[in-house]
Image 1 (cartoon, one colour):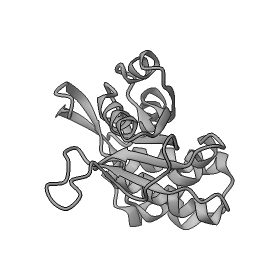
Image 2 (image 1 turned 30 degrees about the vertical axis):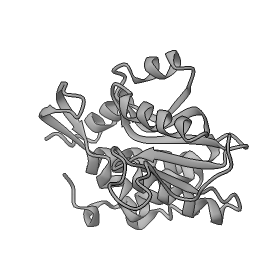
Image 3 (image 1 turned 180 degrees about the horizontal axis):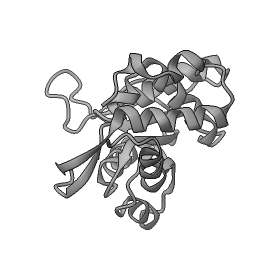
Length: 208
């Protein structure tokens, strides 16, 4: 994994003002350099994998988080009233998007969905501003494999009376998540597919 200070692109690009097509290419390289690893791994789904994508190396990166938010914001339907995601992977994504949305004159609140209900106080599953019934919420996810994590977030939001019809991911591993969402009646988009990520990784010769 490359040290962030060793990535030349960081000194060459202002992620808060760069054109989106330039930003997308830059973010792909950052994912390849910081998040993508090859080896023997067990995923949260229990599946074995020859590679692993630790997106938190990018979603918690100062410039990376801004890039992600700026690229996802245009994908949100105009009627979107909040973004939400299951903790922990989606936490930095919904937070950075909410902040960046203010600078784009389109303020969008963020919600964080707990995996288990809080054991004290309100014992809530959802943290964040309380929205009106039927509010339209888009679910964000860092990496989609089987799709179960984001689907759990969708269910929690629906149970709370909100309307969810879209999931947006940073990376889609193409291992069933998109099909799961389609069967659930959800629209799905990802910034990158695993094939694009792996092709760029090989082009950059980062495995050697």
